[in-house]
Image 1: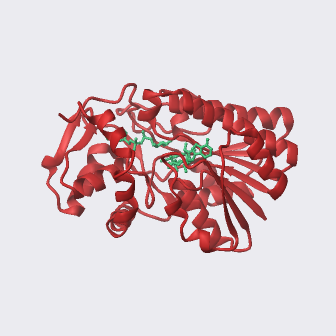
Image 2: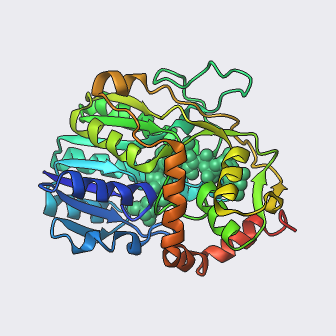
Length: 341
Ligand code: NAD
Ligand code: DAU
């Protein structure tokens, strides 16, 4: 089987490339990635040594480049991780989110129609459901929870999901969608909460916590997400949406304090900063459907996953220090400069 993995130079896509090469060594993997600020070829260094892996630099919204690749490779499965993924950046500049996340999805699905595939899989997010109140721990997102987005990022992901379902209904494209909660693990770009806190705590720098730090996220170790996507794209029902999450809700403050404790750093580093506009309060996934239909269950407990993640960042300083020393510094100064003064 030949699988095109878009966005494979990013956090989850990169982990997915390694998951596939390890668990399905018979399959060929072609990574299509534009290498935006979030894409990093160093992440794929080991994969590049595998003859079953190939990297192609291209924009998913570039129709000519995408069609050329499909014409040459004739993939069986396309799994789309490529996206602008950071909520704060979408608040600063929404346009590229619409272009990549919506139009890019359309181009990929048009190519699937033109050249024929057995499955188009869209990697989506729990953020399409909006948020839940903190005082209703009995509520969870199911696949039938109405779409109700908060940020330009989540609106762009929800738009893409609707387009994917429309291509199934109208053109009978064999699609599936997964909507996952927050991931953590190796190769996570250090603008996101967990790697940002690890890298800054190691440098004894102030740790920006939005608002009161009471917002809740449902954390899942990235390898568990990859296993779920692999199952759905191979065995999930066509035209269906599957939620992915591990019932692991933590407030941001709990997460930050856990990291500080493990790194033996003081809580005085925590600095409360102006809240994110439109900040979602709580995400919580009900993963019953994927468990009942496909037998998926998360394998990594948060206590183990966070320890492994911290160890990975300690053992791969070069990977994230290269990022921090580049363009990212300008982004950080612009985003947090005044808030941390
Ligand atoms: P990321 O930002 O780490 O990586 C995105 C990758 O996509 C990068 O390699 C980037 O170069 C590439 N890319 C961006 N625009 C592109 C374009 N126009 N053409 C080709 N490649 C392009 O993102 P991530 O955190 O790994 O998320 C991957 C996917 O999973 C996204 O679709 C995101 O919405 C979804 N998701 C993420 C999480 C999470 O917690 N990170 C949770 C649920 C769903
Ligand atoms: O739920 C899935 C989503 O999770 C994915 O769709 C997104 O691509 C991914 O980025 C992530 O979105 P979040 O906004 O939840 O992740 P982030 O790491 O940006 O923030 C996690 C929480 O931490 C959130 O409540 C905001 C807060 N935060 C974040 C940063 C960067 C802080 O308090 N301080 C910070 O500096």
